[in-house]
Length: 197
Length: 197
Image 1 (tube, rainbow over the protein chains, first blue to last red):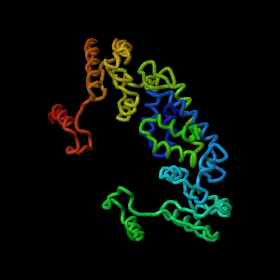
Image 2: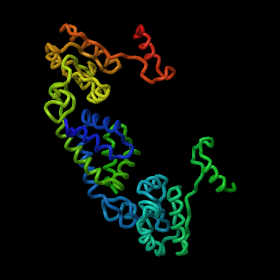
Image 3: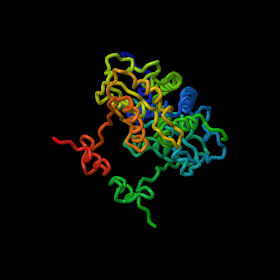
Image 4: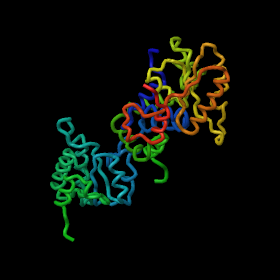
């Protein structure tokens, strides 16, 4: 046998998904073939369509198959605040916390070594948003990595130059978290950011 | 927004895979859209083709897109022994242990309550295999569940009726396993199956 069987090709192809190694891919391929061929056919169709049609929202850059995503299209959302995040998945996380303002998705973070500058993050577009009079506050919710912090700093300078308010989401001990399992850097942040009660 | 967006449909569809819950599906969908659209398109094509074309080997019932799988087609394999397993994935596991005989895949186990009888496991076909003079030994490698053991017992009776040798793979402490982490049933099996050295 010189060429790969179709099953081996399927196992190989499944590994394009993050977190799926060889063993998981084998298990998924076997289970789908044995128990859920219809589900797999449906997945195959939706996946092809999604990869073809889903682009980025013209306003906030999150994923959508339309010109504008459903958050940007919604006239009831609060135009006075905009939350800046790194990835489309961050939008879902913040949405679940009942935030009702606007979003801006960077699709990455500043990384000069990789050649990712402000324009690659759509910050030229973002500049125009800052000229909007209705906007009062920019909330920075980039990740707490070195790059995320640097990106937040860069954007905060841009916002201040426009005389708008800018804030960073709070970092500290997670709700329901037990102190003994929280890492020391987080605790240091929580102590620094303590509030009088 | 009344209808599901394409992204939500993709997340839903990804959940047909075993072990993929809502959070993992979201992560996979976002990562594929952001980093690997070509991989996802390739996966979509291979998956559609695999679900359409992969059937079962006429001889051993494992997955193959051909009439016979590559194990059954291989004339160099040892015709004197046949290993009976429950699932096609078990074939891969045994293959890695350098077994070079034939296989027979039940695609399940006896389960009268679910209406799964001997014919559903292809045991009518297996009966014919037993008439082959070259075959000397049947190795039962069904799972160590109640159903797997019952299935092994049923097949062992069939094989004995044909006057062939029948064996069950050894159960005991796994190689490299530390005794203190092995469950008591396994240890009881290991004690029962002890060998003089």
